[in-house]
Image 1 (cartoon, helix red, strand yellow):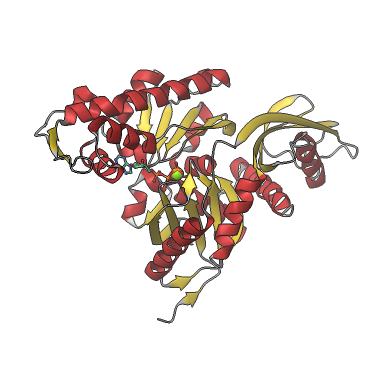
Image 2: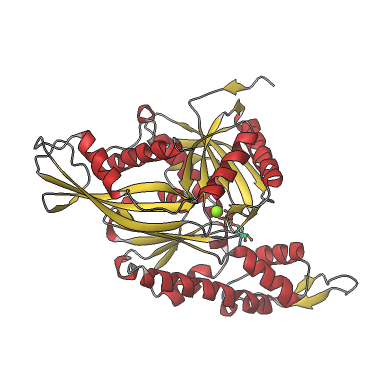
Length: 411
Ligand SMILES: Nc1ncnc2c1ncn2[C@@H]1O[C@H](COP(=O)(O)OP(=O)(O)OP(=O)(O)O)[C@@H](O)[C@H]1O
Ligand SMILES: [Mg+2]
């Protein structure tokens, strides 16, 4: 087949613990992103969000990209790629510069962000993101675009995300072995948040929890800016292991049973005709109930939400999330999970589906593709010609893009 080679396409590669998802999108008149290609391959080379087997990861990426290319009938050369893992750390930092010429210039903004990101970082870690939260101009807080303002002092508040250098380098290596260039590495939860949040929620205060196979990733917003990010090592794979142990069945059956009959709240199970559970080795299959399955699953999800709640309190952001919690990622599809999350977190909880995109329903209706869609939105934002949104958020994103380019140059 004669495929189009089209540099104008947006390409995302969400390299997760359960699946590698490649998405190809295009920008339609009006600035919307339309998803035109999807390739998803089981992920075999990652543990808790981090590459542990190069060959297996390369194979999964290759298969996902080929399937997406086939669907979109094009060839891709570069992609925005997600990164997560418990090696990720985040903190808020502040920088200050004097304004000599009395009017704030682009260079002053660059200088103040650089000052805010000047941290003593261990040799094996690297800055992944420096996300400006807000600027303070002569004591006036809450300014998103200070260029052109008169002032004598400019302060920047930024959110800094750090990650292990080796984890990022291994991801680069895997993608490049597939003949693709990494346009940018983007923190998975920043990407998911872009896909599922509304500007109102970001303003009011909200926490996104992307629950995948290996990790659950938290991002907290308030006043339109990111305030906190964290990675929790409890997610869907642990629930599958609990089902395997609790029902004494091999892992692949446990996963299938969990997907088909699973529920996070035993009291929500109504229709319970029983599940035939294959045994281990020579053990004959047994008939167990959906209620029992939910009782095996609930404690792990409860543990996860208690952990999330503790983390929100530890980071002193629990009181910021008046807009509640948005659950996304594959696990967010589990029946009863929203209700359980509400019970434990004691805030309103909703399901986060990727919005702001059109095209393949398989993508737009599944929380498992939130990160992939967010990466596409990220890619669009960094192409001014593609009609990205304007205003404060776009301004901040612009700086973020600049800082990421700076980081990329350090490889
Ligand atoms: N329909 C569903 N109902 C319940 N759970 C589901 C469903 N679909 C997928 N899952 C679970 O979601 C998890 C995978 O989610 P997702 O695809 O978001 O993970 P990932 O992005 O590959 O992993 P990670 O983000 O942790 O690196 C698995 O544990 C899987 O069992
Ligand atoms: Mg994920």
